[in-house]
Length: 339
Ligand SMILES: Cc1cc2nc3c(=O)[nH]c(=O)nc-3n(C[C@H](O)[C@H](O)[C@H](O)COP(=O)(O)OP(=O)(O)OC[C@H]3O[C@@H](n4cnc5c(N)ncnc54)[C@H](O)[C@@H]3O)c2cc1C
Ligand code: FES
Image (cartoon, rainbow, N blue to C red; front, side, top):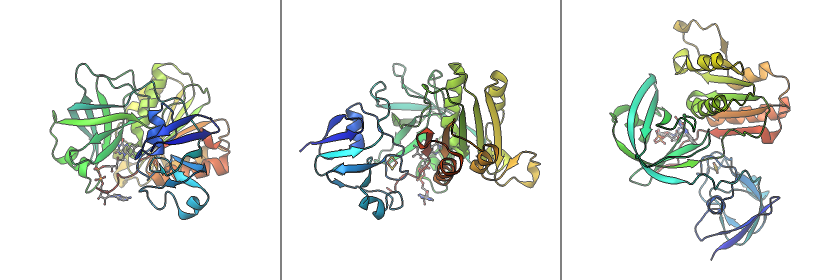
């Protein structure tokens, strides 16, 4: 039996079919709620149940604790209503303008700019286009039902090929194929675009981008989008990596800086190698931001990379630098759930 869900404070109501999650039903109704991984790992979709009951669904225990459940919180990407619901969550822009598509694609090229990073370019069928917002991601659909998420690294205007930056996860089901089996021209299936991590273009606040490793991918898309549309917002990019070789597109931020005085690039290495002869910043990437900025109250921050970096950045920027919580946007690169 379909359940009715009402969002506060937005006031929109929509039906949720049997077996749909709250998030799926909201997206089907063209309503955009915040979300990231869609599998109970990142916490982006967390909101409050004001009335009614849910089946919480499969999620990571640390992402939604028993205490939080007792406080009425739920992860809307996995929660399914057991009754009609009233929920409290921030509604974002309407999602309906870009349809989520399921498409075949062909691997056009695989480059290896660093030992454990592959840049994969994908071609869609000639009559197909994927419309997306800079920063969103796609999921590969495997034959056995597994899905793997990767952010689009190209800006929407530059969409002849889709570009992904894929880290080699030791023992990783998909990345192992990318690094050891694929030669190019393989046909894959993808679905997207997904996610609420995208450039907020109605704001004119200066931006701080914080990237960890391949978390650079969606941030590259956002910066190229902003430059293409001459947004004229000051943008400081902090890119954190272990060693010099892990800054896998070292010349690109310099090209952005030459193209626009709005861009500043600060690479930060956590463990430079002796041969790196590194004159630049070292340490944790979010700590470099804290060193440089006493007051973030007038900024927007976009952070992307491992969950530990994203969580540390959010906590510190909001608690100690006055960043408004709703001006922090992030995608956590969580692992896919076990098969
Ligand atoms: C929205 C989103 C966007 C993403 N975008 C990108 C991107 O652009 N580029 C990118 O490189 N990655 C990205 N990721 C991360 C990527 O989707 C995952 O790392 C994915 O699991 C990789 O798939 P795989 O098949 O290679 O590895 P998997 O088969 O998923 O990994 C399996 C390996 O990881 C280990 N593992 C599983 N869980 C954990 C854990 N919690 N801690 C430590 N080890 C664990 C397993 O033991 C196993 O060895 C994104 C994730 C999300 C949610
Ligand atoms: S936990 Fe729900 S979107 Fe990540």
